Length: 153
Image 1 (tube, helix red, strand yellow):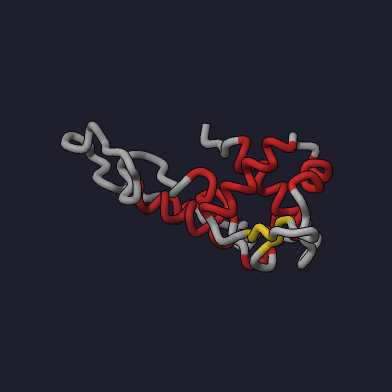
Image 2 (tube, rainbow, N blue to C red; image 1 turned 45 degrees about the vertical axis):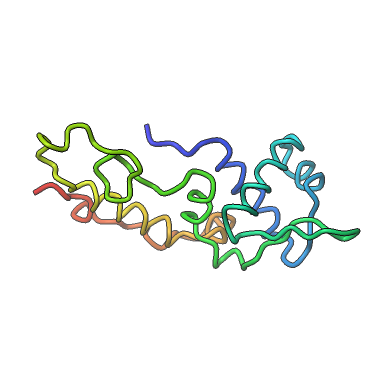
């Protein structure tokens, strides 16, 4: 099963709360109360997002907190995922993988997973945080054709 980790899912929720309050700075405590996540979890997520992405900014002072750096329509799902999980690589055979394939010398697929990985990355890039928050709307790639996924010929 291909599944996002729990922290990535929580990050989307936190970013969604910030997106619904554009330009308003929210503290970790406020986000914790709004999401129902523990303060520790929210603080950990916010630290990761500040350090590993350009999605939010931490503001110090009496009116400090966290604020989105972009509109929700400009934040792609892939940016959020990669901020927490690193680059998307379905297998060790994908060019961007950080690990090596132990069967590369006998494998008949020879990098054909790259096409699948590219399609998934493009789909996630084309879906914004705004799209997720407004789920009644259709996603841009809702009708991916089966032929786009047939990479082994």
